[in-house]
Image 1 (tube, rainbow, N blue to C red):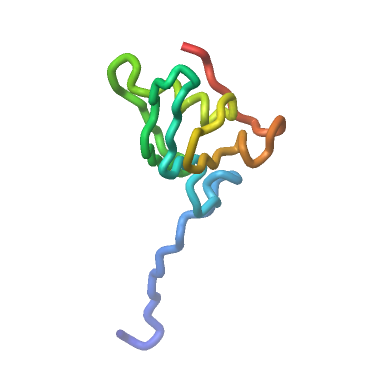
Image 2: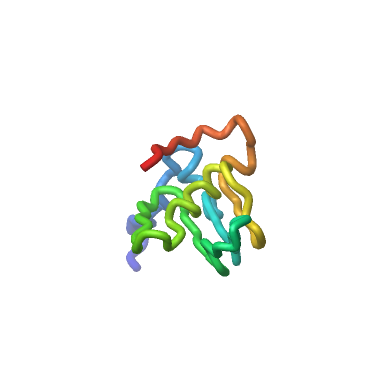
Length: 102
């Protein structure tokens, strides 16, 4: 390299808002089971991670657990086993999370 040469060093992108700066998953389900009182197993060992800025769609046939996942993430229901981590669980009543019933 020549003396006095200008070297370009790319910078990491600046965080755009509070969510972009979060290194961990914004929403996570770890080995989640959900069994209803009727005995119906809606989820078994479900695992999911959603990071800030990701766009996620839950697709599947009727009765496969899509709405159950959304209800758990929104804090409207409790898992039978496993761990759910989402804003609704970290700050009950204070999370700025929205959803629309189907």
